[in-house]
Length: 421
Image 1 (cartoon, rainbow, N blue to C red):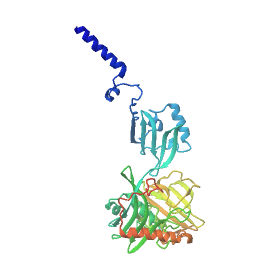
Image 2: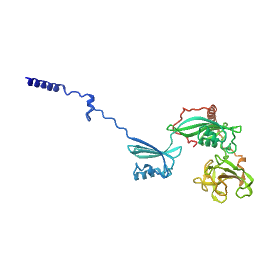
Image 3: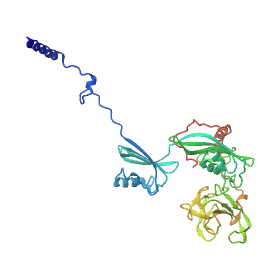
């Protein structure tokens, strides 16, 4: 009888299964199965991405930097492709780079050419792309101001700012103020300047938009403005260009060790002779700038002048730079140079007792004292730009006068122009 009951129950369960179908599988159990219709596929895994930041070390090349990720043939193809964009032979020690990989393969390589531009190599749909692009900065506009106690450089440093800003200010007012001879304690400065940031970290300066320098009671003001298709320049409030034919001095900072004189006791020859020049004492290696546009007519060495360069500026004026430790790259006879361009570095070659620059200027072949020379300014603001300039000058000078600091006002991430560095 017990056997009969078990048989009837089994038969009833079989009939129920035949008429009702299989038992639904709970979601928790369905996820255990794979390949069944309606089962959600697992989300794709993100590719493993790594970023390496570093600085090019002495002796490193593109092969040593990328050789782990590329074959010899790929490196050769990349080198050939980059020649017209930026030759890899120009990669210099000390410059930063960033290398990005995905799943162990090279995705991109970025190398800072300078503070304004970088070389970018990145994986595209048809192989690697190579391009030069502006370094992406964010900017904040701030007013920096201070009072001179000893030198412009020390006073700028006392405000917490870098030496690049001092150099920029010296360059802006270089035609009106000699920062070697004219500076006095109590002089003051103000600058409306773009501070640059890269990935949240301070990265120097952008443009000085407006500046003011009070020297011995006289105040000079400068407004940065682009007049039509002309390169941006600095103008006073009336639209007169601050740029003149010649800089006041060929060095940004040093001291005058000997002035212009037609009778001076020579420290080496121990004789009295004319010294139609200005001697600037400065550390060896201090950059020397061309005081005006021109063409190099002499570049070489002799026993008295040491390493020297002579520049013809026009049919009337020439300048001579003596005792250099070395020349800047490319400074050969016939080479054209522009005002402010570094042409060499202070030294003590030739007949010299110590590191200094002997600077001479000639007009129509005769020596002239650079500090007594009156030279004209570059072109003023054109008539068609006067209204735009007045509006810009009013805006910038108002912000400068107010001492405004827009610490939270970030400007465009991509730079519009190069910085002061």
